[in-house]
Picture 1 (cartoon, rainbow, N blue to C red):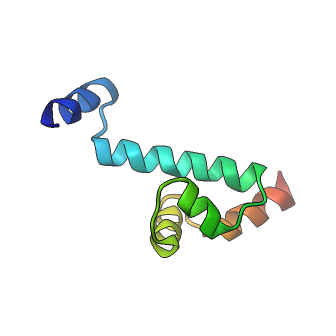
Picture 2 (cartoon, rainbow, N blue to C red):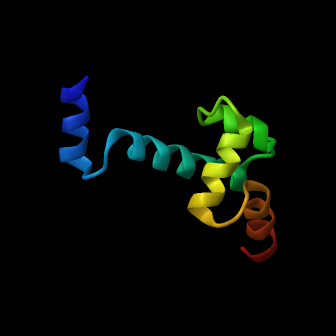
Amino acid sequence: MPYCSDLVKKMTSFGFSRLLGETRLRQAEYLLRSSQLSVAGISAAVGYENPENFIRAFKKAENMTPSQFRAFRRKFL
């Protein structure tokens, strides 16, 4: 497994955990824009076992909760 982590870091300049987190959040943004799934449903779809952890990670990355993001996108974009 260390080989895979090293390879990912060399290819992307991100560690595996960071790359996975970024990928999950980008997918969550897509689902928030394009689906009617609940926040808990999106959380599960992108690989979070606990919706509260998903909301916390999303808020840290985007400075708003997933629900706020969805409302903002609908209102302004």
